[in-house]
Structures are given as C-alpha cells and as structure tokens.
Amino acid sequence: FSNRASAYFYAAGLNEENLEKALVDYNKALALNPRLGLAILNRSILLKEMEDYEGALEGLDYLISQQPFNPVFYLHRARIYKEATAFRTAINDYLKAIDLDSTVIPAYLEAGECYANLGFYPEAKDLMLKSIQKDKNSSSRAYFNLACYEIAEGNSAQSEKYFKKSLK
Image (cartoon, rainbow, N blue to C red; front, top):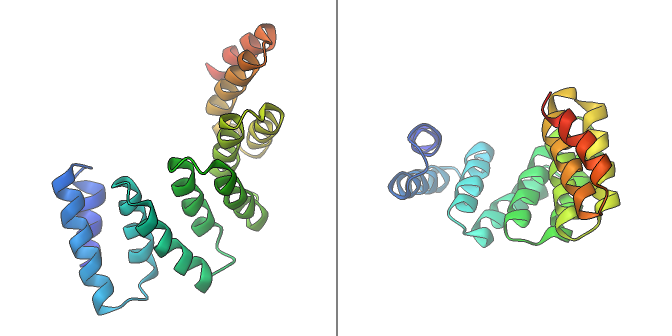
C-alpha cells in the first residue's frame, strides 16, 4: 500500500483525487504496520499538501520521538510550520536540522526565509551567506533572496550586486 500511495502522490501529480487515493493507501499501510517510518514521513508530507497541518505534525512528532537525531524529520516538520506561518517554530526546527547535520542546505535557505518573513533581515542574510559557503549550487536562490532582503532594507546598490549574482 505504501508504494502505491507513493506512486499516486509523487508520480501521478498533486490533483485532489490522487492525493485522496494516496492518503487511503498510506492509512492502509500504517494500519498493517504503524511503525513504517517512510510511510509516516510521506503521509505527513501528503497531509501538508492537503493543508492538514495538525495531522502532518502528528506523524513528524512521532518520527522525531523515535529518531531524535534525524535532521530530515526536523526539516520536514519545519516546512509544515513554515507553510502554517508559524515562522518562529519553523526556525527552531530548521536550526535543529542544521545543528544535527550542517550539510542540510535547504534548512539554511528556508530558515532564512522565515527570518525575513518576521522582518529579521540580518539573520536571514547570514543564513543565505552560509548556504552559499556550504553549497555553491544553492547560490542562485540565496543571492536572489539576499537581493530582496537588501531592497527591504533600502540598500539598492547591494541589492543589484546580489541580483546579478543570482543570474549566474
């Protein structure tokens, strides 16, 4: 059931009918074995897409209770909090993911975006620069974000420099 649910979810597109089919199959798989970590994770991601944040968080809370040193679980839980606009809580989980594994580049980018949503541009810029230092492949998004943060702070000359770098 878990594999078929993943097929509905990932391969068949994110239309409502396929999301519902995937959810039914994840629930069946978890009824047979409630400790299927990958099924719990994928079900939580699916529930986030369906905007059932409470249900999505329940699964990730369980996974974190079972594997508190897995940065991927903190990253995905942070994404749910971010989408639910609980930016401070999301930041905490992103930073925990980074603390557990400093190579989880999306955590830098997304935590920075949360800081920016709260108006904390110095913190946001710091995380963008760290993501660039850690992984040059993240630089386009990070430089674009930096350009936006500089505009928000009224630094148009610096913004232009970052925007040009984002295009490379």
